[in-house]
Image (cartoon, rainbow, N blue to C red):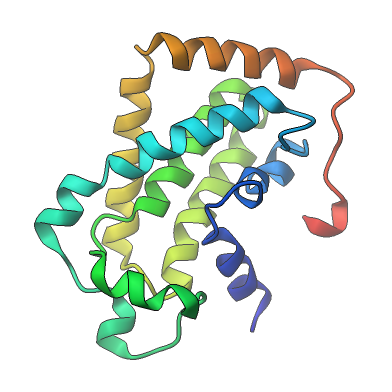
Amino acid sequence: GSPRWEMAAKDADLHFPAAASIFSCALNVNVTEATTPAVYRLLQRSLTDFGLATYPAKKAYQRPRPFLINGDAICTPEDAALLKTDGSYPSGHSAIGWGWALILSQLVPEKAEAILARGRDYANSRMVCNVHWMSDTEAGMAAGAAAFAQLQNNALFQATMTAARSELDAQTLAVPNPQDC
């Protein structure tokens, strides 16, 4: 019930449009399909790349999640049945969040410190939610970084990055409500 618990619960939602707003405060830009379509599209497309980067190890290890060991609550009880059957190591959410942090910090390097801090907090949300161990989130971040490095040689990714960079350079973008940050 703490504010950090609530933030972690929100971080668990990787469905769009909610997922698009994860880094809005760090960017100081509302990321929506209507206002920043290239950034929105970039996050949507890369979600799969980052998330799937964890599955070879996840399938090999099938590590039990913390809540299955300690019996404590999780932030998203509606996801418990799925989480019980999906290995903990490495964290797919952490791979996605860190991958997005790397993308956005490359697009807006002057805000990299805040963006990367949000990426670390996002990965930590998985531990706050009691669904990942620290080593899961660290390995997830490493998988996200590896996937990000691979994307550097992808022509479609680079074209979308160019469009997103131009979009973020615009001076008339909507900023998030300070109360939401």
